[in-house]
Image (cartoon, rainbow, N blue to C red; front, side, top):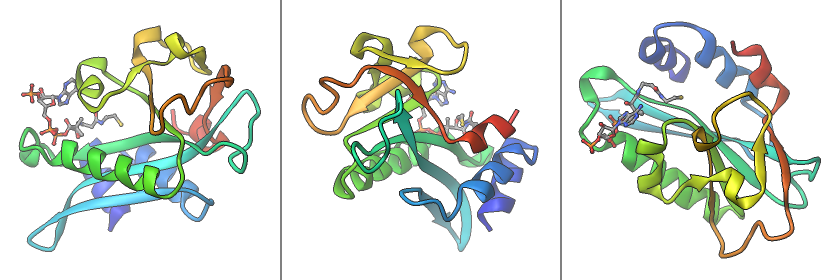
Length: 157
Ligand SMILES: CC(C)(COP(=O)(O)OP(=O)(O)OC[C@H]1O[C@@H](n2cnc3c(N)ncnc32)[C@H](O)[C@@H]1OP(=O)(O)O)[C@@H](O)C(=O)NCCC(=O)NCCS
């Protein structure tokens, strides 16, 4: 069902196939918003590495993909999914979450420019598009370097 949702939401297979590939990997999390027994929103989290630090040492998660069906957008569903997901990341021991996206949207959840915390993105994106949220105060102190998503993301062009 999540696969069909992502195909409908993004209008292509890429994100749906990415989530399929990442399913089953330790520390991935998937949350859906349901209305009238249909999925109308979905958010996914998967572990990333900072300059080779492995997930067992410091659990940092990457947010995405996230989507809400067009007719259900701007009703707060995306915000609800993201806030719920961030709280679950915290509850399950995540120290921080990174996201690649529009700062105008993600700043409202507390994300700030990752570069200011010494974190770079492996992809050639503007600094302001790659953001981080520390779930615990100063959780990332001492951790600097390039953040790497799971290799499965490289297959999602
Ligand atoms: C991004 C997305 C998940 C937001 O879901 P949503 O349920 O519409 O979000 P909310 O209702 O919680 O928030 C709506 C607010 O976010 C803003 N917003 C939505 N998408 C935005 C974007 N891509 N960039 C900046 N602002 C955005 C809206 O303008 C609105 O702002 P306002 O509150 O000031 O009016 C949804 O727009 C979507 O599915 N987009 C297509 C898929 C996508 O681009 N996903 C992100 C990359 S994986």
